[in-house]
Image 1 (spheres, rainbow, N blue to C red):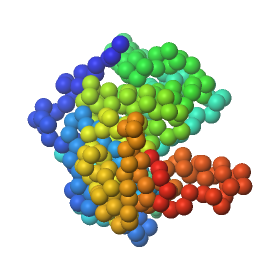
Image 2: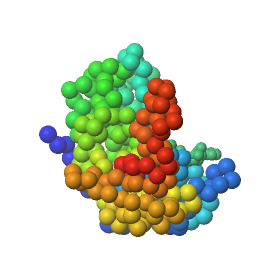
Image 3: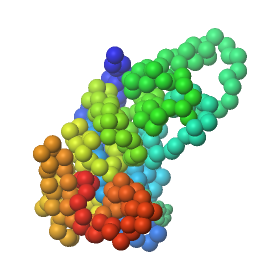
Image 4: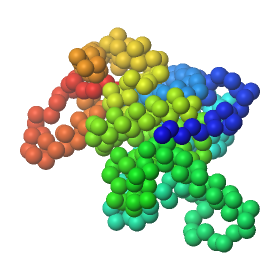
Length: 312
Ligand SMILES: Nc1ncnc2c1ncn2[C@@H]1O[C@H](COP(=O)(O)OP(=O)(O)OP(=O)(O)O)[C@@H](O)[C@H]1O
C-alpha cells in the first residue's frame, strides 16, 4: 500500500513551481584548489537529479554546499529561495553509507524515529496528555514512512540484524520523517547488490513522483537510476556539465568536459557504458575490484586509464 504524505499542505503555495534548488555559476575551492566551478542548475519540485563524476571530484562536497556546510568560492546557491543552511527541516540528508555493528540492538523503528527527534535522546519520561498526543502523532508518522519505504516487515528487528538494503530503506525513511521538500542522498546504492540497487532506485523514483520531494543523489553508476532521472550534474576537475541525461551523457559532452576522448556506448539492455575519460577509479566497484586483484597478486593487470566503466 502506498502512503501519501500531505505534500500540498506543507508546501509554500506562494512558491508554485519555482525551483526548490538553484546553483548559479557556483564554484568550490578546498585546500587551495578549485574542485568544480561553473555549476548552473535549477531543480523543480519532485525532480530527481544525479551528481556524477570520478572519485574525489567533489560530489559529496556539492551536497555539503547545498546544506550550507561548505561555502562557495563564487556564485550562488538558493534552497527554497533562501541561502543554504536556512531551510531547516525542509532539507533531508542521508550521508555516505554508515554501517551498523551487527550487535547493535536498537530497532529499525527507533532509528527511523531519530529523524524526528534525534536531538532528544534518552528514555521518554511520563508526560501530560497534550504531549502524549504529540508522541502519538510522531509514532503515526514513523509508521507512515516505514510503510512508505516498504520496511514494515523488519522495522522491529534490531538494525544490526537487517541486511544492507533493509538498513538503507530504514535510513531513507529516517530522512523522510520531517517531510523534507529536498532530499540529499550520498551514494545510497553503494555496496548494495544489483536487485537491491534496482529496488531502492525504484523507491527513490517513487518518492519524487508521488511525494513531490526533489531528490539530489550522488551516484557512481547511473544505470540503476537512469530511467527515473530528470537531470544529471557531471562534475570534472574545474568544470561541470548539467542537463538531462540525454544531453549530458554523450561522447561529445563528456569529451569536451574532460578534455580527453570519451565514448558513451549503449548496451542492448539500455545500460550506458563510458569508455575513456577520467581515470578508471571513478567506479567504486572498479576500485574494489582493483583491491581484490592486488590482494590476489594481479596488481599489474589493472585496467589502464581509459578503460570501460558504467556511466558516471
Ligand atoms: N575541508 C577540506 N579540506 C581539504 N580538502 C578537502 C576538504 N573537504 C574535501 N576535501 C577534498 O576534496 C575532494 C573532494 O571530496 P568529495 O568527498 O567531495 O569527493 P567525491 O567526489 O564525493 O569523492 P568519492 O567519489 O570518493 O566519494 C577530495 O580530494 C577531498 O579530500
